[in-house]
Each structure stands twice: as structure tokens, then as C-alpha cells.
Length: 70
View 1 (cartoon, one colour):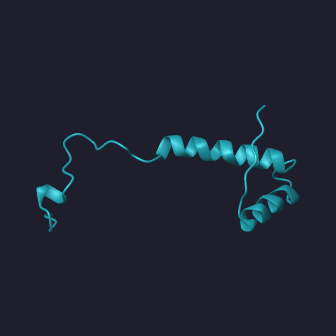
View 2 (cartoon, one colour):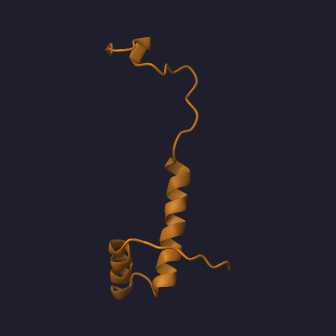
View 3 (tube, rainbow, N blue to C red):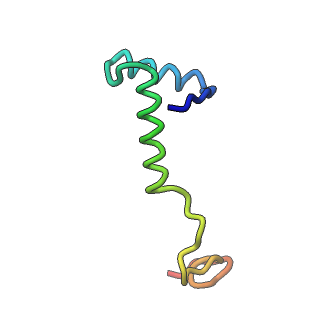
């Protein structure tokens, strides 16, 4: 398995350590691997939308620039 070195903020390291202490994970390595995997899965299902949906205007509701028509 490839090894990766990262720097994370102290507050994230503390949260990971607390999860390991509570027994949610066996160790830091398992915690980081599982949390990263979960994050990637969530990103894939709800990640950024690069492409506009066809038929939707990009300049406000109903094609109006400054106002919204309901």
C-alpha cells in the first residue's frame, strides 16, 4: 500500500486521537484511512457540479438579470 505524508491542523489531529481513544478505531492509521475513504465516497456522490444542467439559464430566474420572478 502506498504511503502518504500529510500535515493536518492540530484540531483535526486531536479529533482523530479522541476517536481512537473512544475505541471508534483501532489506531490512527485505521482512523485516517477510513475517514479519508468516507470523505472521498461522499465527495463523489455530492461533489461539485462542473457542468450546468441543460435548459437552465445562468443569469437569474426566468432569464432576468437583476430580479427573480416567482
